[in-house]
Amino acid sequence: SSDEESGEEYLFKIVIIGDSAVGKSNLLSRYARNEFNMHSKATIGVEFQTQVMEIDNKEVKAQIWDTAGQERFRAVTSAYYRGAVGALIVYDISRRSTFDSIARWLDELKTHSDTTVAMMLVGNKCDLENIRAVSIEEGTTLAEAEGLFFMETSALDSTNVKKAFEIVIREIYNNVS
Ligand code: GDP
Ligand code: MG
Image (tube, rainbow, N blue to C red):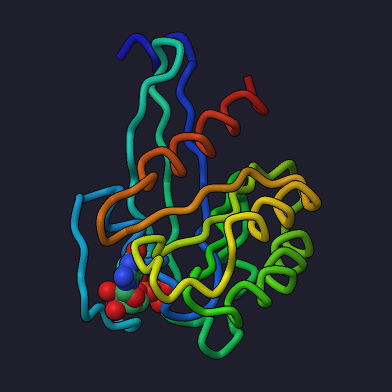
């Protein structure tokens, strides 16, 4: 392609992190395949999905990594983080403990990254308003304090899923171009 000829091709690695069952795998399957699984098991899953986007008439490929459930054992390896230039750090708005874990996930991400990482704090399952345990304001406040983008999403009803990924991809593009 003309992109290849001009050397203008972009491949960005993005990782999704956060406690078990916050909806990481479903956010990715909703974004990449428009699929949702009510009974998804942590064990199955591909290493990553590649999504292509066009920015400034350039082809931008996002290689988005999902854990295979290692987070249950706090055993997400450095290989998972290696080369990542973007991250979605996910909690479940209906489970307080998953929000309390965000600081630890941020620490781990910072420990493993040697470059600028575009980071989005994601409060997933915003369809569960009736059992909300973390307010929008708490999410906003944490994100502002840590310099993260912030969005509440629902992989179930698709709210903000595309937006969350695309903001991160655009920010990475801005960081490198
Ligand atoms: P992961 O362990 O972080 O990868 O989480 P999964 O994607 O496997 O999701 C864990 C559970 O939460 C599954 O039963 C999903 O169906 C459910 N889930 C994921 N996202 C949402 C969401 O946005 N809303 C609701 N209500 N349930 C969700
Ligand atoms: Mg998963």
